[in-house]
Length: 530
Image (cartoon, rainbow, N blue to C red; front, side, top):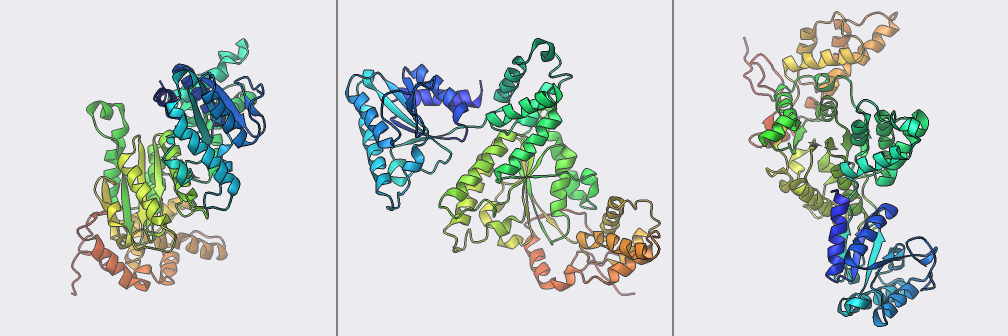
C-alpha cells in the first residue's frame, strides 16, 4: 500500500459519491493518470482523456470523434453523454487550467469555459447512475478560479513514497536481460538506491535508475543521489547544501547545544522508535551574527549523515498571485517525501518581515507565515528543522510557541575557552592544525570577537606569512591580525545589548556559563579590578 494507492482510493470514493468536478494538483501527468484510471474502474466508470493536441482519446491514445481541441467542445460532449444514454465516464482533462485564466475579467473566452464547467458541476451529480459523468482536471497548480472553488473537490496528489520508489526500481531491474539482472543491485545497493531516490518524482526516479544502469550496468546509490541533487536544484524551491568536513566538531564551543543535539540524534534509532520516542521537530538558533548559527546547521547534517535542504523563502516569492504559496507547498511536499533530512530556514526573520505588521507585499509574508506554522505543527516524518535568526526580537510571536520547535537557543559571542576552540577548528580547516600557536594568547586578545571574526584571523595571518617567505604562521601573526579588527560587539553594541535583553528568560544559552575571568563584553561573570 502506497500513498498514491490511498489517493486513488479516495478518488474512487469521490466518484461513487458523485463528486462531479475533481481538481488534482500534480506535475506527474502520466503516473497520476495510471492511478486515476484504476480509481475510475473501481467506481465503474469508463475513463477518457482530453488535451489540446489530440482532442478526446481512449486509454490507448486513439482519437475519438468526440469534441475537439476547444475545451468548450469537450465540455459540451460531457453534457451530451449525461443527457443521452451514457455510458458512465470519467473525463481526464489535461490542459483545461490555462483556458480558465482571465478570472479577473480580462478574458471573455475564459469566462465562457468557466461557466460551462460550473453548469456541469451543478448538473452532473443529479444524473442517473447509468449516465453518470465526472470531470477530473489535472493541473500543476492548486489555484483554481474563485468561482470554481466551491464546486471542485481538490486532491493534492502525493509524490511517490519509499514503497512506490522501490516498485519503480524493481520494474527497471526486471526489464534487464537475464545475465544483467542478478548483478544489477549487489550488496544491499537496492535499499540504498531507494533511500537516495526518495523525494524525486516517479519519472525522475525512473530516469535516475535508467541512467545508472546504462552507465554502470548496475544500480549505484551515489549516481542516484547525484542526480537527486541536480533535480532538486532545478526545482528552485529547495537548495541542496554541500556537507562540511568534520561534522559537529568543526564548530567551536556551543557545548550545551552540541550535547542537546547529540541526545536528539539517538531518537532516530530503531530502539528509540520501539521505546515510543517521538522524532525531534527542530530548533531555533538566535544570536549575534557570525557566531556559528549557519555553520551549526551545516554541521548537524554532516554529523547525522542526512541531506541538508535550505528553504529560501525570498526565492520562492513570485510576481504572480498565489504562486508564492504554491512554491512553498511544493517545497514542503518534497521535504515530506524525502524523509529524514535537515531543513534549514536561514535568517528567517528577514523572509517573514511584515508578516505581522502589514508590509506592502500583498500579504505574501503573512500567508507564508501561516503556511509554515501549519506545516510545522501538522507535519509527519523525520525532517529536523533548523531556523536561524539574527534579529530575533522581530520574529512573530506565533513562531516561537512551544510545539513548533523543541527548543530555542541563544548563541552569544564565544567565551574564553570557546575562542580557543574556534581558533583550533579554523587552523585545522586551513591545514595548520600542527602550527605552534598559543591558543590562550590569541583567545585573550580576541575578547568580544564573534566566531567568524576569529576564524577570519587565520587566512589573514596566512597572507602575511606567505608574503614573508612562505613561512609558518605564528601567534604574533594572529595577534597582529586581531589588532586590525574592530569587532561587531563594538560597532553594533547597542543592538547586541537589545538582543541579549530579549534572550533573557526566552531562550536557552547554547554555551556553558563563562568563567569569572572571562571579560567578554555583556556576558555574565563579574569583572573586578586588582
